[in-house]
Image (tube, rainbow, N blue to C red; front, side, top):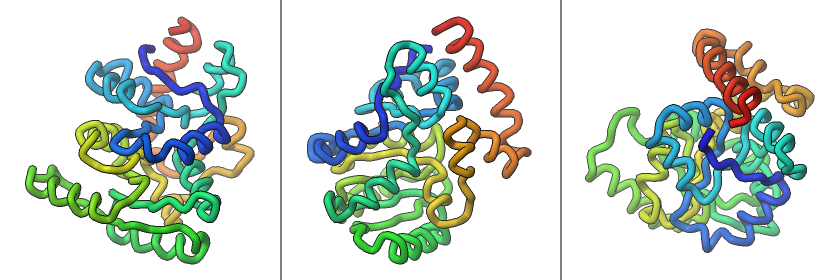
Amino acid sequence: MGVGIAAVGMDQLIGYVTSHVGELRGNYICVSNVHTTVMAFEDEGYRAIQNGSAMSIPDGGPLSSVGRRRGFAGMERTTGPDLMLALFEGARQHPLRHYFYGSSQRTLDALSAALEADYPDVRVAGMFSPPFRELTPEEDAGHVEMMNAADPDVVWVGLGAPKQERWMAAHEGRVNALMVGVGAAFDYLAGNIRRAPAWMQRANLEWAYRLMQDPRRLAGRYASTNAKFVWHAMVRGE
């Protein structure tokens, strides 16, 4: 469908990020699923952003399943929350500095408390909840200056797709850290949203669990994008 998805597994991804974090400064990683892939297929500008990343990892189970069918046996689902947790759990071996940009202040406060309780070794460089509106150029420059002054290794961007990918692309080379767009990961770690049970994640059914939690918002999206993905990627082999 014209979108380059990295044929990686979680162990490979973690090893790459931790060993190349310095070289990745100023670049970004997209956490891609069926929804963002279909959006990119239909929007040339958004597709260029996905393909301009350091890598777009297969957050959605169907992406890794299609990849394995096409010969990439080691391709696995690599979700944003799982990547975050893996780096937090390995904080002693890889003492990276983390910055969290996005979501509400209430969510960031809950996230900070959860990190302090569950991952005391994690080095938090900073957290910031930007206004829920378009920023002025001066405001944006101030945010970047504040972020860079905190000297993070990784900036986790929780603005939701496609806003977070557009934000990362616009700040490529300006933010002196690796940027990773993780959508609702802040809400998961803060306890605002429950993740699907492990068996549903393994069976590529986390989308169904999210649908049960928020059917009004997600039903139309899933009906449209899932059908398009099945037709184009799985039936037509694009």
